[in-house]
Image (cartoon, rainbow, N blue to C red; front, side, top):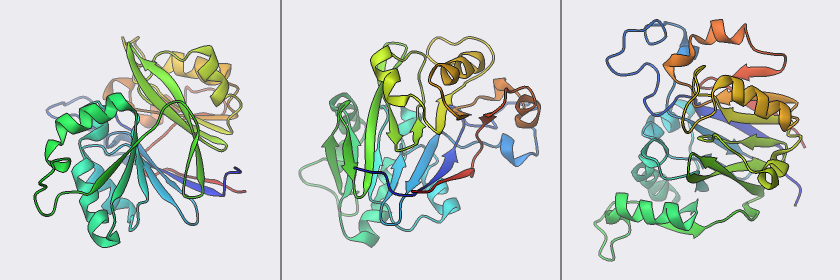
Length: 260
């Protein structure tokens, strides 16, 4: 299936603590630059008829309000760490106004965690007003939501399997520090590639900036944006000046368009 024209909006580009970080007085956390203020990482994918979000972060409600999202057709979950699922309860507003269940696409492992974390959502005798969630099992095989084809990409967050997603010419990968060759092939030659780049120093389960740049080059990305950024990386303006050509730091509210 061909991918329709897409609009991609970065709802958040920060790491699990967000930026500014609570109780921190570093220059990044004190910055007045709006590009140094980062909600937890998520993206909005929109075609003319279908709207998807990747992950429901702890900031999900604020992200939806700030972006003015009125309709949501589905949630794609990369993995079950709290900074990627904590906002799931707030899909209940869409359930109410759309008068239908919310489709949540997740692997079996992630579904098990959602049942633990949000047991009341899946209770047989549900309390009135809780979200109506339809869990749909996905793996590393392509699927379609509405008119948007989705290609899952299995990556590794230390020993934890995480899904990235390719939508036509746009590939989104977060919380990774290793990608196996067969899965790298799925992301090859993306027009725009998004990768996590936590900080300058090496990290046990995330690409650092140097590793993310190297991976973007290996994958032949025409343009790359880096996300899941911590305050340790430095100020947006300063780091941006050091990046190679066509390699950029993403920021909250950044919008990209992909014509047919």
